[in-house]
Image 1: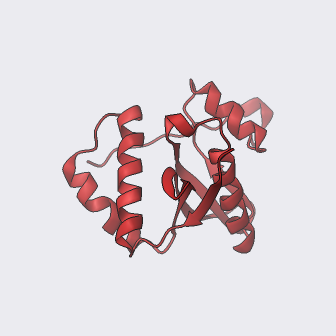
Image 2 (image 1 turned 90 degrees about the vertical axis):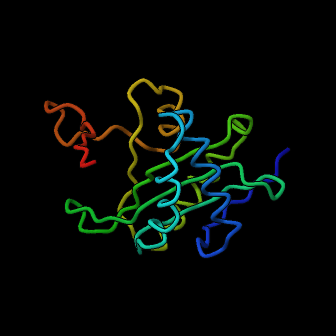
Length: 159
């Protein structure tokens, strides 16, 4: 049985920086391909510059195997803070072993400490495995009015 621990990182520590960068590079490789060097160079300084950034690392046997990058926001419909889980990644060989669940529990504990009204995240429409995982933790597709259908996450690139 794996011993899993989850810690909120200190991005001032070089060990945490190295673990975060290594895991996000693995994650990006699975989703979009290799991160360009300039993005890698900006990632840690950019996260450190944001007071709203929360970064969690999951460890198995003192080895970083999971990462969650989150941001504190505000919900105008609840009048409370929220935490958006922007990236959640578990190395493939550690998936289905409780690592992701431990990270979600740690994020939820932190959200309760901050008196947040909700947790949010985005998941790809065809990623049914992740959708089932999140649903098992109480997440659901957002619908403000049934007849309006689900919310869709859109973006406009400025690059």
